[in-house]
Image 1: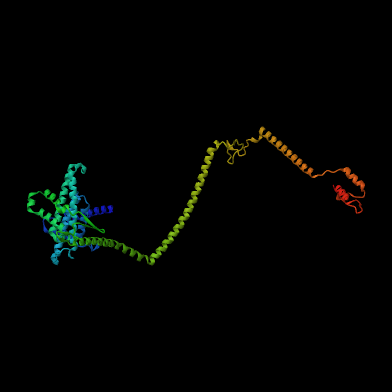
Image 2 (image 1 turned 135 degrees about the horizontal axis):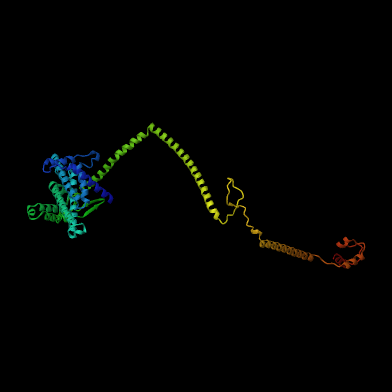
Length: 474
């Protein structure tokens, strides 16, 4: 918002400076009545391209001047020019109001014929009151501080001091002109106390006795110290709208109650500004909307569709060509890169191989394929005969003999264990007993002896047969 405010102030100052050459030409004689009406004839018309809400061009110039009056430095040259310009605009505004009153016969404040201009007169007085307060603060700070605090030399301080008093004089004349030319508006829109203080201060300044006794600077200092200047600095916030304390809003003063015409005027002024902004934005958007509509209508024709089809086909063709060119380019680039890498690897191998400790070389006995005699050639079948040393050979034989001895001992141990297992399973027998048994019964065969055969005619007892059977079996 601060940046927007700065831009608005700069634009307003430049616009008003450009208009000075047309409204206040150098060959204009201000002493003639016809010359006074020259600028009024230029600014009293209404520009329809800017909207009807703004009113005549004079109203727009007054608004721009109020912007400069609110934000410029009080002791600057541009502030003084803005005050002088606003004083001229106020005289033209009062002249248009007098013509309206003469034609319509209505001099009441805020009548529908001249209500926009009356609201501007009220805004001028309120803004002059604020600007005079700022001038008073700057004057006190300037006179109470050393000159080197804000200025480069004392001469610059004196120039700023004189410009400040001239600006105060212009602002006082603006307030005095509004009081004399449209006092009905001030009486209706200001509170009773504020209007009384303003009237008392202006009448005191215009009295002949005061003008004879005091100088111009003294009169300005006295004006800055009156009740109207030192009071009514508070504001009342109603939503987004700020209303000054001196605006009539039902205040009670000396058993009298003020009207609310002042508040209504400020509300209408805010609404008017909002309508101006809205209408101006719409007017700025109308040419663009017409352009968009014309483009839309033109885009719906057959010629446009054909152009679109041709454009799509051209885009597709160029896209295919671009992709093919990209592929070919990538192939060429990769081929070049491959050749470059091979060349680099060959250079690296050629330069580094002679110093490689793991490479072996030999003196070639023949030429290469190009019939060149190479001094050193790589030996790809190099044998360092590390396995042919005497110690390695003896070590291998010892390992072989040791392994054979170990296998032989392992076999002997396994055979011994097998024999022991077989010996435990065999039962020894007595051969002499077997011979005696065979002599007793010569008719028995070997098989019968082994299976324990028993004769049917044996007359021995059962116990003897059992004993003999056990013995035979065994």
